[in-house]
Length: 178
Image 1 (spheres, rainbow, N blue to C red):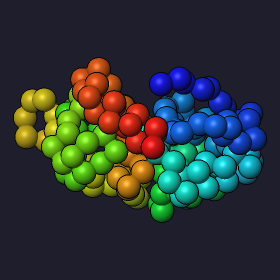
Image 2: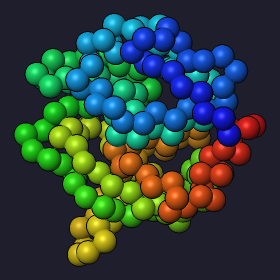
Image 3: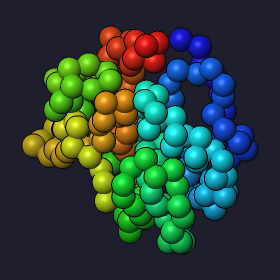
């Protein structure tokens, strides 16, 4: 795979001739006003995903895909609208630490049961966290459903550790090549 960088802040659309999207973190809550004002990029990403482009979005990328996202002051901004819901600030750190996430359904990265090591660290939450994966802490019984999954989308707060399951990332790349 060849990674092609672009900026949701400064570019007007996703790059030409790409076959998939990887939307990482990056603290979108600090740049919410600028991200919201770049309507052409928001529309470009929205249309690409709804037309079937495979997308893997983690934490800040997940927040960016929501209909609305709060900034650090609690002001609501319109985002890409791929995920029906709102990303909002919480008064304390939410779901902090290492986890294992296991697919509860077939996804772009493989069949139900596909697992990744991951971590979460955020002061934001969502009205639409998803239920495509189950997150489990390495010690104790604490766990929760997470991650939005659609035919061409995996998006959630967990940061996946790709080296924990290179075959699953290979499966994502296979979908990007279709």
